[in-house]
Image: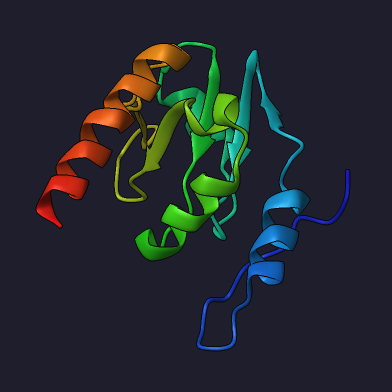
Length: 126
């Protein structure tokens, strides 16, 4: 597994920096029976993940800075971007991880239809 880069975002951050960061995290972390694609600079805590009681599955941890998340998720393969997302609450007494599924439909045709509706609304707005 290549070194997992961190991404410090400032005025000099480039697309190449983002691509290098994303590619360095292409290999998921294995946690029990789960696979976790971790795009957060904070270290993933497997013990607290296990203690959270989430079902085994495939998860993605978003980058902490929402502005970068937009670009990061646009670069990800759709099958990874659509995975259930993990949130971490370091103040939780037990576990601390909770999950949120994507609101976008997993079926490609349904996603395209949703995007067409949004594109039409933006086109109509001028």
